[in-house]
Image (tube, rainbow, N blue to C red):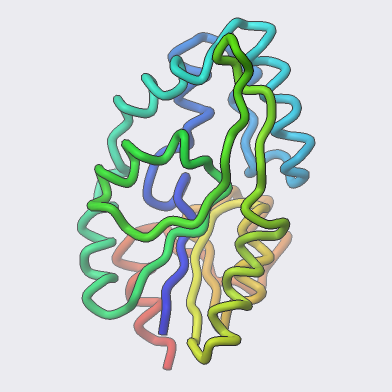
Length: 198
């Protein structure tokens, strides 16, 4: 059995919310918890970054200072004792290095950023469309059973594709919209929920 987890909101804080706080640009607080259309969200973010003159290196500086969510490292360690773990994220390899080091380098599938000659983010490249869902389906096609957890709209297809999916601290509106997935609020509760899956 393989466990697939979202990154931001499950193991690490939301990068864009931290960037918004550090820069004072409140428009960057919108995340996949608020906007289900990822392409629309990223184009919006890229426009705001350019307007506010926030470069990739500025975001990377914020990320380097971000700690994991309290308890995340211990949870991940306990999880790895029972399952193979893969992080399926819509973040970018250009963001992820410091986060992965703080989590002891779990396996990560994510995306890439494009930058212009001035160091501004100019676009992004998806590893593949619907990457989280397709990764789960790919693992299942190899004969693995998959359990999964996430917190946002962009995790729902992953949870649906898995043999078992659960939310971890989702906004109440998302939990109400997708009542088929159990809601967990602590790492102990999420681990116990996973352990009940046969």
